[in-house]
Amino acid sequence: MNTTKIEWTDRVWNPSKGCSKISEGCKYCYAESFAKRLQAMGMEDYKDGFKFKILPHRLNEPLKIKKPQKFFVNSMSDLFHDDMPDEYLNQIFDVINQTPQHTYQILTKRAENMFEYFQNHIVPENVWLGVTVENSKYLYRVNILRKINATIKFVSFEPLIGSVGKIDLTNIDWAIVGGESGNRARLIKQEWVNEIYLQCKKQNVPFFFKQWGTWGADGIKRNKKANGKLFKNKEWHEYPVVRI
Image 1 (cartoon, rainbow, N blue to C red):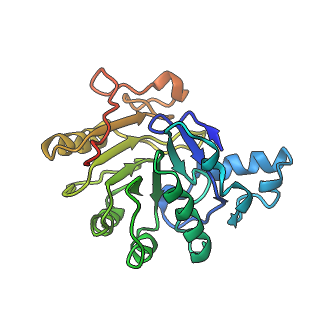
Image 2: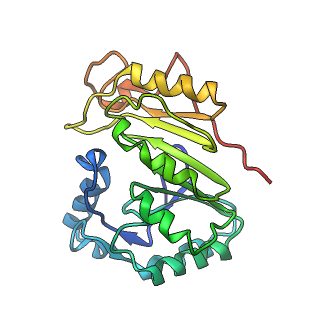
């Protein structure tokens, strides 16, 4: 369990690792590339690369931290992967329930699996549930998310690789937008970001712009640090308001 450079959280917690590609946003997965590096370094958890595997020795890590933190759960996997055993998922949520001082941010591309699980389980109050939408083809994930009763529901439009068109953000509490990074990163267009921004403003949804990534606002490919994270000449780090 480590601190992280991901701007919208404090720490990452990976009680499992590995995943499999299910949609266009997965094509150049950052976690897969990172897992291969860890494998090459000889890290035991990643000796089989990016193959899905539960990591029970990491299960109780949040219990060791008393100071309230935001945890991004499974930055190196998907909590609702098809191969995730329900029994182990229950153990993960047991830890979450034992640490009410922390906030757990769970992001998935497998909205159907998440919905199915919470048909028979209550979402803990300290859990934020999110889905990834990389272009308009995957907006259906938002509709599935909307059906789940959670304290905070959010959408990550990252990597944004196409227009998402018209978005119904009813009962959605937060939107994160970001471009892809890496040598093979796909283009992000300023107009795609702007259409999400405008709809967030119209529907009163907090807007968080994470980064341009490898492609800048001007459509030029360069180092992601050089492209920065300014949109409309400012940083957008809005957060949802937790309803008590």
